[in-house]
Image (cartoon, rainbow, N blue to C red; front, side):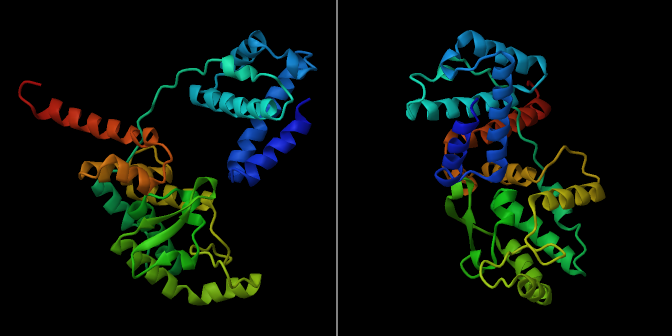
Length: 302
């Protein structure tokens, strides 16, 4: 029932909002799920959607044991879609505005200690090209705090080796400049210099001379986010670091270590490319929690 409107909405998200394929897929899946629910409820008119119907949909989501964060995301997607319908004049009101979003329990992000980061960075075998690549990837993730999607989107021309900056395309295709440290610069230089033949083969194969990817797979094409997740998992297993991690762990570690060393929250927000300061504030909870643990362990009257 909502397919026709959904197509127009998806176009808006893609072209005006600049949403990634992953985000667009999530929105599409959420709308498809709600459309199936409406069909099961024999609801053939969008104007018939009311609070009771939405409460039933919410109850079904809860009965399927979705996480609160997942339910909140689904409702946010649908609220945005119905806001679009309201703005387009399809509906007089947005029925999702009256539905309260379930409270989310904030989980503190996992992060590595400085010694664990040092151990991990020394793991790749730098005697071969892909070991050099992996070392450069790990150094860049920790040095800049950029997202993995931003890392794999980097081109050779985005790195300012002399100025110590990289040009990053973040969420919504927003560009920003991020500082990059000397260790990461050195690792990238070594990788790029050692992979010239591999790069030329990739460019020739794809007739690609502009926007040459910085990090390549074995075929000379742009490395994927999934490949970065796999290589990180491989190196973590090799070090024996017992921690639930993802490529985002480097981002969490970057922010936590910066705040631990005295960086102000606003600067960390800009470095991470967060639109809202509230998103960055989760890391203050991490550092406060660590201070409390140290206090409890060391103060004689804690």
